[in-house]
Length: 200
Length: 200
DNA sequence: GTCTATACAGCGATAGAC
DNA sequence: GTCTATCGCTGTATAGAC
Image 1 (cartoon, rainbow over the protein chains, first blue to last red):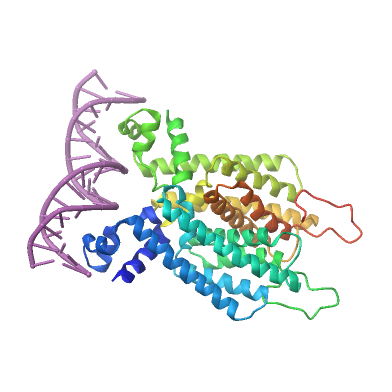
Image 2: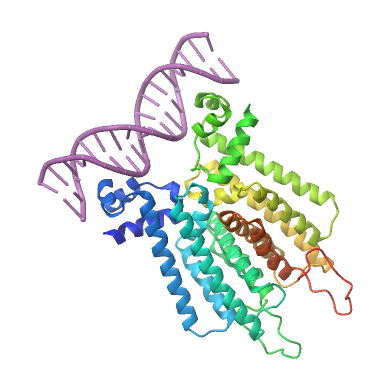
């Protein structure tokens, strides 16, 4: 039961925001009463904690899978983009992107958890970017940390805007130039070089 | 009076979201009653309409100023970034970025107004990018439209993430690699070339 | 674990006096 | 234009029976 509650609440947070749904919404959808929900999650703050914890764990597992696949940096970034695309396909915003907007209104524990989520994302991306810069598949110039921040920000922002338009292709269109600017130019006399994320 | 109401409401929307504040919040801050607010704005939906209209008009005027300054494309983009930076400095999110997150919960007229805001931004950026591509100051490769979308998305996303951290430099760090990837490489044998937004 | 019933605060909104 | 007073509704949360 707890997991079904989380399923419904998760969708509602991602589509309407933490301040945009109520226990009554969840209860109605599951055909139970509000009181039943309070048995599983004492209050909305605790429900929020559980939502982020599960979401972050699932995301971390997806990143582990990408690491295990032994891909080069551009391919890993492409896989990372696919994670976002899947969320968008369900007409949702990234949960923590949504919560970032509402940040000032969140209970303290949720605030900390949101920050932790983005820290984990940035750390993972930073390693990928370092890998790519060493291998020469990603452009040098900015620090791996700054590039990681540009990627998270660019992806979250592209999602944020694609959703109101109801147009997934807007996400892809907005992300492509960002990645194109990060991937290293093929070296002179290396005409045959190509990667999934090459410009054009 | 109406403009003071808008001032307070504007700050509350940008910091807490449209679902994160109430008439009571505004009334308390202005030392008036809720009923007084309803005299100026019939309902929250009408208040929201007025908020976006004023915000969008102010933003459009700022873009006009940038056009009037007769700058090259990278300088215009830098000026555009400064607009975002100023909002962030006041510990706020872009109003329409915030509303984009809450989009599904907004009254219909507000939804339309949010879309219009982003359309105007993209159109302006698209012209700037075209100008830069023709002049050779911005990289070719992606369409001006896609690059414009990447810029709006990247900026909104960088804001979205910088605010929870309470760290303005995060915005700049996240935006720099994005712009660096868009600005054209200085041409060979043009060592002296430099623009405000060059890589490094 | 789920229910009924209820408490109590807050919400957006309105009527009518001043 | 602003007030007092109040409405009807929804919000989160709890007590206690089953």
